[in-house]
Length: 631
Image 1 (cartoon, rainbow, N blue to C red):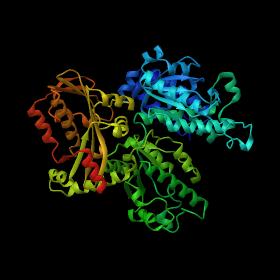
Image 2: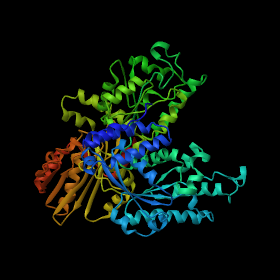
Image 3: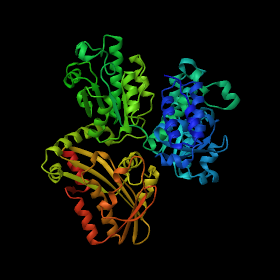
Image 4: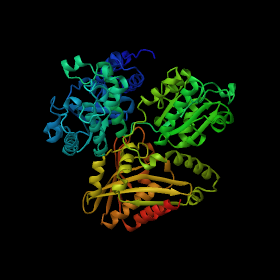
């Protein structure tokens, strides 16, 4: 990889060309994602963080960045880590503001609401402690101690918590018996990590420092001399990797990670060129070093698909020849039905990526593109800069490492909808074919035989609802983000109306795809706080059914005026006209594109809202579940 230059950033900043500077900061940060963990990478990240602070915060907001606050509760020295973290969040379009409590006060700050931290109003607390802070007395008591710290921290500051896993000792007093004997330090740490990971609440997320230390090597991951002199928990060269692990958690919490992996075929999923070598001549599976390497890469990709990552193909090939290995080669790990979209032709790949995005109804910025050809990779970076391009090493044995360490598919939860995502998107393609063959759009909607359950958000649907709130970027009226704790509080508030929508049709179950939140401001007025929906169910009237449900409950409560606002971002232009489409009248519009709307809620306006939700049969949760059992 060519050396990263930040000279242009300085020039742009000096000229106060802030928007261009932000673009360049992101470009440099993307390059650094592929850089090796070393002192040079750390130095570049620290310079990026310094440059970020020379850009007015409002410029980042105007560029579509999400601004979040993190309070750091340090048991270690964290300045380098948090600076590198902030820089590594640039590719995710997240601007992180940080503040740090007093060194060594992590337990006190977690257990008692620190006034400075409370005034800062963090979205996240990072409790940076580790093995050096363990008592090594009783594992059960130690477990309760840390669980109490995590829970108190989240409760005191009303936010999610990130904690570290504890690193196994680098030196053993019992040699190979260490893990076998329950009273050893290694066994203690292993049992403590397992207990905490199993028992910590859903609002506590773990940066797996123990894995990082094992991956890079216990002897080198931490510099004992550096720790003794400055209490830095990691060697300088591995600070970028440490910070990147934190960055992927933050990105996953706020919708910054990716959902679709787009793959080339020749020399990417197998060795050789199927058009030249024939289906029997490509290298995949047992027998050769390259064949084993490509099979291992496919196995890792399949594991991503099984936990909810969408797979697509963009290949310069004849379609029939490109599909043949998946059908006739028994040693292929991936099969055709593992892909949500398969495009093989001789068109430029940037055009095919756009076609895949249209077919799957996803944003280009939700894609990661993998291709062995550096020319194709550079073309995509230039022609479709929204797409993230993975830098592949030359040796296919290192492909898994490159993809796994990229962090682009980090997740903080896995829901039933995630596990069935490939089938859901493939069913969408079938729906599109039906739409084009229908005589009218109304006939198409009627032929889908849609059934929906619209109900209050409850414990069973809390996790998925929160995930959707934090991941949905395009069909999202306000893009307000809430933690699971926030949503739970809204669920139980008498002045808040929450609704989720699940949608099924003749092609299958889409799962929970939309959420709306309304806040009652008085006995007669209600504000729509959030309205969001997965783009998988666009143009099926689901949003109208959801809004009607909210309006019906508001009418039942005696609400006479329903208000709402549109807060524009770089991605949500598709919902700009949603409220007027529902009959809302414009109250105010500002120069930055924000608009406020109002609806006089009467029997007539409620009936008009119901008319827009036609073609969707509303059923009870029990009826919806019963249908699922019969399927």
